[in-house]
Length: 240
Image 1 (cartoon, one colour):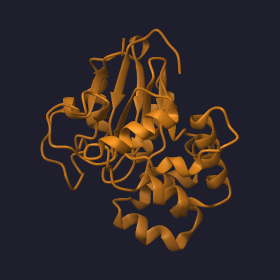
Image 2: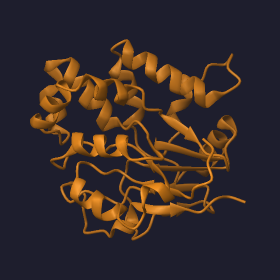
Image 3: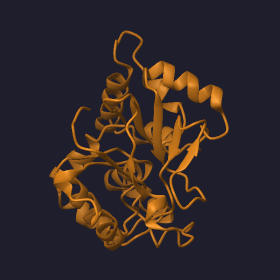
Image 4: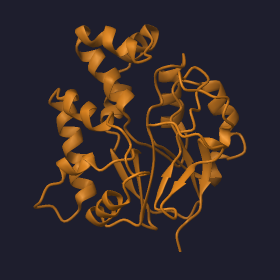
């Protein structure tokens, strides 16, 4: 992804649309390139509303999170609804999504990975499990991963995508795997969410090579700790 606007990263929103409005108020859409790291749904009451808002915000990209995958799975397979609700889903959100086929398609088409012009890799979860989807014949590993994820969702293989996108973050503790992942994707650092950190600002690891923007943003999140908005929503300083 290229662009001249400064980059704003938004961590896991989890249905807290009211707080999202508050968080983005200092960052006008026409002045920022806004990147959501995924998991806009569940816990809070307005997951579908958060998806629509992010979709329609100018200069914005949204990545696929494990909770979006779970919601798509429950939408397709009614036997998964109880499981999805146990993850924080709300039936009214599922019913709302069921009546909006364009939004369903848009969710499926969300990238799993996004590379910025300065070599930053944006992903939902902070681990290297995505590498299973690298096509060895492709010259662009990120595109090959994104293409494979879309294929899997269109083939009703949500289980495989869920397994990867719901796995535990490991980059904070495993610097060697982080470095190998950055080399495999030809990137310089990675930005992610998925697992809440305990800082008042995005958690920085390994001299800035790994940055976690999940500050338990949603007030309905089971791990919410009254963290400030700045723990999840913040400008990303470009690499020189």
